[in-house]
Length: 222
Length: 289
Picture 1 (cartoon, each protein chain N blue to C red):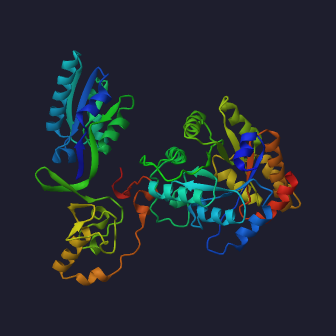
Picture 2 (cartoon, rainbow over the protein chains, first blue to last red):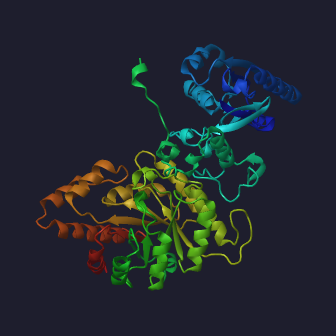
Picture 3 (tube, rainbow over the protein chains, first blue to last red):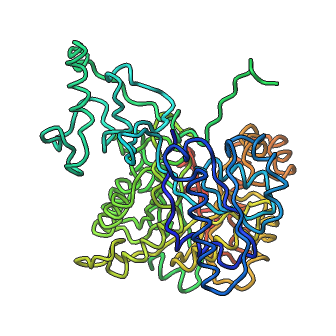
């Protein structure tokens, strides 16, 4: 999933403090799972904003909505009647959802309420960890299913650097060395000989180097 | 008189662009430089223009500085992060490069290393701000340095911009505030179009150095006309080149006329880009002197 984290309340207030009416818009997908922008977080933020404006002695209408998916034009446009009466939207969706809202409602300010961080998963309740950078050319088959692009601080493709100590990365003892994990995994798979194979230079043109990316699947187009 | 003083005195500065080699044989590079030494105020050494891997601008500048030529280092956002950019700027100053020109750099997809990962850690205005900060004795993190570099700073100005003049002027104001002193334009073939852009400057203290690029053929003129959006290629110029009995001579003649036109119009200087015709530079410089 796409993992996000709520922006500090002060930053959100600064962005919307002069508005007359505010709609806090959540998303039922990734940000619900990572507990950053689902209906629960929409309610919490809306309550905090109401309290802020009440303390300021201002009457500001704060509405709540949670779309099925903000990264889907159909769902975003279906919410028109509920969205358009407001003077500003705070999107608690990821950066994709926030932009789709802004594209759909061209004259309505849409403010991000979360910082979108990475593609990852939950390690345990309340802990999410990065697993993929969307480099566009997956090499997990070569590395035992552990991604050095996303998980090695230097994105090394051919073994650990000199900073790997006791299975930890030099940037923090909290961070696993991706190559330590890869070697252990290859051992478990009985494929340690794969470690000796040199992974070719990475083609970054499929990453952001080639500019914004787009996928077109002709057979499913209408 | 160095470039800095010449610009300050309002005298016409002649810059030449010399591409460093792809490789380490610098014989031709130094030979071209030797032939124009004393006839140009400074040599601009491009930093891997069009994202084609070559000997670096810093290396080229140091080689030329050792031969007694004044140089302009191109610093480029594409390939270096803020650490590397600052380190190379310090190296340049310590090695005798007195001028820098900040450029954004074309993405790797333009060049011969399509799979490269671009950097763009700093954008153009931020890079200028960093250079300015270095000249004031502190690095980007605010740490005081042992000795500050001294640079005359330049940047690019997209005078060929179509329909986005306010944005270009806003960018220009940011570059001026960040300490840029001279501004090199895209290749100019139509001085009236350039003058049209300059009218928008409204009293800004901008030292404009138009770029005169040597045409080599009708095909090159047509290609620029068709594919380079911010360069206006007058139809008459293409017709003139087509009709010329000696097209090489005509190409040189066109460059000379453009440089003379730039000078007569009162611009701060000119940057001549021979782009493969370096051996014709002395003739051009003679014709304009």
